[in-house]
Length: 455
Ligand code: C2O
Ligand code: CU
Ligand code: CU
Image (cartoon, rainbow, N blue to C red; front, top):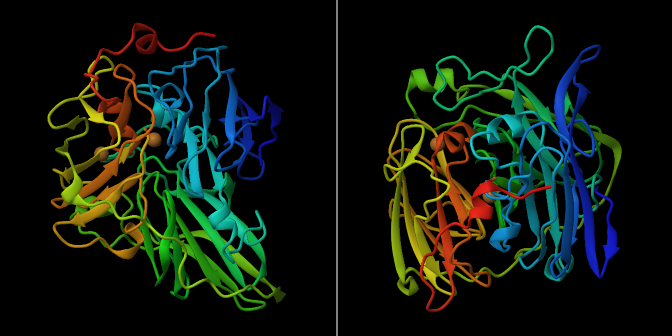
């Protein structure tokens, strides 16, 4: 957990991006990057209503940035490609947390280099708490019965170094053969409670996971990217594409050992594709060892939260996005100086998003949490029925997303939307939008933003 100091009532966190070495397998030091350490970064914990302030120093010899994935914040604090932190530079964003309790994450977003920076280890979690969440009887003791898991895949070369080249025949960049959880190889967790809450982030560059337990026991999904679901949903598996999160609770028996695994992903991308992109893999993710005596946990509440459902009828703008190839949305690649459109503040928009290929894409929007209103006209499955900031796009289906833009407006300073397969994002499968105040028109990206912040 990250330490902070209080500065003028704000929680002030410091993050130092540094290069170092990490031992994943005994006797082998691997060159890695991390925040405040050699690999990954500390968990930032904050409450709704908190003023957050960060001092981020870049000790690397290349430009990076730090983006708060899933956070509702002003565009200047977003940490996208326009907030580059030059080598030995510093960036000090601030914002007030105003969104429901959930788990977000942070990672670099430098234009064209995001995949490499995240793969080397620059990523961390943000846990947001709120009064409504605290009022529920849910497991919430960090590291005891409320355990966040950053799940990533890596390839190591013969010297134990990270293999950074794209996987052979891959349409999505790196697909790793080895799984790390919270930066640990061959991880296990010693459980001491009947109920164990796991908040899982797919922190991989491209791999899809189909999380399940080794005996296919059912568990309860209680939350998605942006907050709790309306009610727990029982299932025995859940698919996460890169950057998606899930919040699940599983029941344990005293003395047992079970594995959290990833099953083959039952989406048909075609046999050859599935083979070469890890879709057929059956992987061990985390061993869970339950103590001989487990302390009791209260039953899960029958209802968790109320989710105001956004109505398509109220949408004042409709847009459509087709992701195709490795690098385009609606036929265009990312241009730092092109603002694709402006969304009006305090309005609801309906975006129809489609994967135009036979391989993996997903779709992420900055600043907002959206709702998946329908998939090919059908209601989304329960795990996708809450707040989302990233959604997997199964080829050939229309995903209708509803979102409301609020609070922060700037006609010149853009937010991003993009595929979160990092290879695709880096290749240009990304666009930019601004949120317009009343009467404002789309402006031009400021010179300073286009060149990034200075040290
Ligand atoms: Cu997780 Cu624009 O990113
Ligand atoms: Cu993001
Ligand atoms: Cu993609």
